[in-house]
Amino acid sequence: MSRLSADVAVVRGSFELDVSLAVSTGEVVGVLGSNGAGKSTLLGVLAGLHLPSRGEIVLGERTLSSPDGSVPAYRRRVGLLSQQALLFPHLSAIDNVAFGPRSTGAGRRAARETAERWLAEVDASTLADRKPAQLSGGQAQRVAIARALACDPELLLLDEPFAALDVDATPAIRSLLRRVVRATGVTTLMVTHDVLDAVVLADRIVVLDAGRVVESGTTTEVLARPRSAFAARIAGLDLVPGQSCADGLKTDEGTLVAGTHPDPVDDGERAVALFAPASVAVFRDEPGGSPRTALPVRLAAMEPHGELIRLRAAPRPGGPDWLEGLAADVTPAAVAELGVEPGEEVWFAVKAAEVTVHPAGR
Ligand SMILES: Nc1ncnc2c1ncn2[C@@H]1O[C@H](COP(=O)(O)OP(=O)(O)OP(=O)(O)O)[C@@H](O)[C@H]1O
Image (cartoon, rainbow, N blue to C red; front, side, top):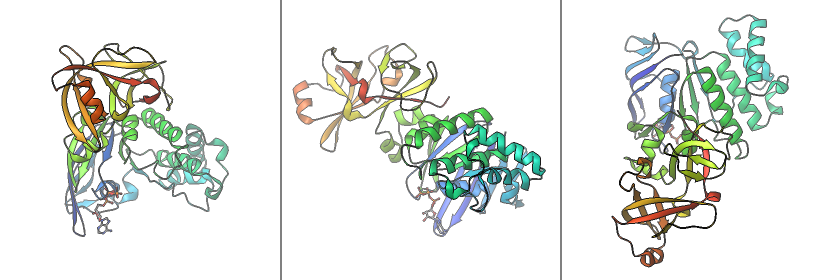
């Protein structure tokens, strides 16, 4: 497994990608950005599918690309997993997985053993003899994950790996990918449109806009204090970091945020609780009643948000940092009735049924 360092430009027609990026050994970095920002171009230049017009790509001890020349794609030891599984249609699942090890010199038997091991790793042993046409989208993506990892890549590139799956298949494949990426410790770059993928899989996110890196930081940092318009838009969710527990999530200082667990997550595992600002109710005094979480905050700002008004929270003196920037979207009538002003102390409350708890990057 290797550290990646890239400082490259790529020209595609009138578009130019110009980025400098370092990914530590074993780190998982999510790449986000709007359509046409250059995300796929970035993966393409790392994989060796596009030639840079400038710069250098270094993976571990090896220079993959420099002004002196480029290592061809098939010799980079870079695994690429796309939206579509792109399996060879005429080969069985196991032969698809064995293809990579075979082409890098493994004997037939060793390649088959490697493929069997990887199919077991992705819970697809029973699919070994099926042809791609006999696999569902989720099954094909499991086999594609096994195929990408069976080559023992030093860098794994994921290009919207869940985009083509139906919503029911996504959580299982997402947690499978999280498990195998963590288990192998492979350095990984993942392009996604979905902030939840970044929350679950990435240690850090990088936001691209018009071919440039405009933000970088842990998912929590970028969402709590978005600096680019894109990050602000994806940060349309409230996020509380902590540890998963039976009833939801417990923050580091012991606040329980009651919620449900749509993705499998163990008690005590790092996690985040997510909820929509529109599901937050605002009170002057501590609310009681139904199973909900009430957070004491100071009202930091009020801004129009479509038909609603977005109230932004800040911690009260001595309160935890994660309260900074939490949003509540309420009707103008509710704001008038509350009669609150920025600077005043209020309570943000959210019902357990509105909160989902997901495993989080390290
Ligand atoms: N073959 C090509 N020739 C010329 N320009 C291209 C080509 N492919 C892509 N581009 C341009 O490069 C830019 C970046 O495209 P890219 O696919 O990397 O963006 P992206 O962030 O992955 O977008 P999306 O989220 O829509 O997949 C776009 O402006 C696009 O028009």
